[in-house]
Length: 628
Ligand SMILES: Cc1ncc(C[n+]2csc(CCOP(=O)(O)OP(=O)(O)O)c2C)c(N)n1
Ligand SMILES: [Mg+2]
Image (tube, rainbow, N blue to C red; front, side, top):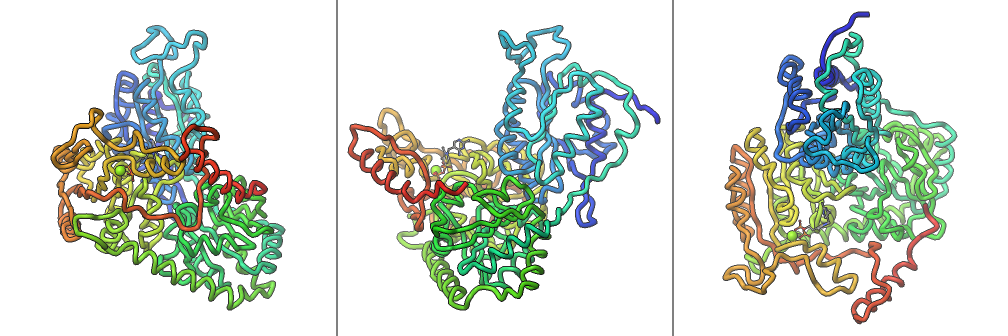
């Protein structure tokens, strides 16, 4: 065995560059590049290493404007690439590192691999307290980076160089395992990063991490077959796992063959095209009438690659059949067992194939003609509701969010990728955006992190340079994190960002009303009640000028025709385009036979709160607290 002398930073760079993933015989580099912002914590360590070895190892360096955003970029890239590839993200110590914590949590919640390399304070402690160090009074070894522990799937702090020899392979095992994946954090003290060590050669050998497709166990399949063949009203809930596993054709074949309607989650939308005969649309709190009615009465629910989050279960009110049972097809047993599920712990594609074989062997002919007709009729009705909601109604300068969604979707089509994360848009997009392709819908709704949207647009564009990318973002999210527009300009990344300006946090305002609270604190108004010539009580923000100042092509669209023409200009443009669309806040899309558990104050002098509390207690009676 030979040895090679490198610093810790150089060893990390060389190692990262030589890791590959393989699934179904296709190989790709796992770490496509490195995003990072430098400071005193990493200029000498990882910074020096990237400068000296980055090009030689074909590991490009990219610079964001904000460390949180770079994690979103990496996560969006990895999601679009079905978790087979991601970026590494590095930061300096203290604030730079902590800026990544929110992004880390988002990746972990959504089960998306991102490698985080925050710098840490001196391991030798000689200069303590170093600039940006939190001097904990009694815990000497506590650092800001301990904040990564609860939001990472793997965490290590390298206080001696040789610890890397065990830590790096373990970090990559976790990153490339679809069950364990999420944010993986290796905290690198600034002095240790620059230290040299004689590394064993084999640490830098090209290594291929196989992304396995675990097969279902026969006894689990048999249990599921018993439930499915006995069910009269079965339903499939498809989540993100179906798309990551590339199981969309199997899902389509399975649902069609057995006449089982499919309902969608945020991460699962796109698994079937919107007009697939078995696609009954979105389910749960942001769901549609067809899916929610079918779900209410289903006696068997087959979850495929879903976490069964509260927006799917409508806080445990979606499924009302008294004897409803669940089959959980999931590579992660935690999810497979949810809601008292009969688990099929396996890759979604393999599980669907195997279940199809077993059901046919059992002579299962699928659901009744009556049930199929009921599902088809519900779908027809829902599709009509969606068409109506998307259709422009009212004065041309009075655009509602639903109409904007319809216009943008009509212009860019069902193959462009639409991106969103927070506000009222995710619910409206789930119900109204029509998708033709599994990669055309990218809404981060596990963490629903304001600020994900524009950053994610860059990530998707990098993952799929030939695809049109449309970011739909509320004015609130835009104001929270828009600076990656500068990065899009610098990197020459072309995307279209549609800013829907309704003067503030309108979804929270609606939520506030629903808990009986008079509107307060959500709209962007002058404190002293000043009225502006153009915007009345609202603080006027010229989003168009703001975007233009960062180098984007910036357009304003007040009417349907202006919006269509702006989208055409964006398509023809050679750079990132921002289209600002003022929208009417009170043109809201209603809920469809569903609920969301948001607590209401149990006592108040305000009558509105007391009324809301009564309604809340009534609604909670529907909650299936027996299902866990
Ligand atoms: C980082 C973060 N902070 C707070 C929230 C809670 N939150 C969800 S949506 C929202 C308002 C979003 O406003 P905007 O983007 O304008 O969308 P709108 O509600 O107007 O559709 C807030 C504050 C969040 N999801 N993420
Ligand atoms: Mg808003």
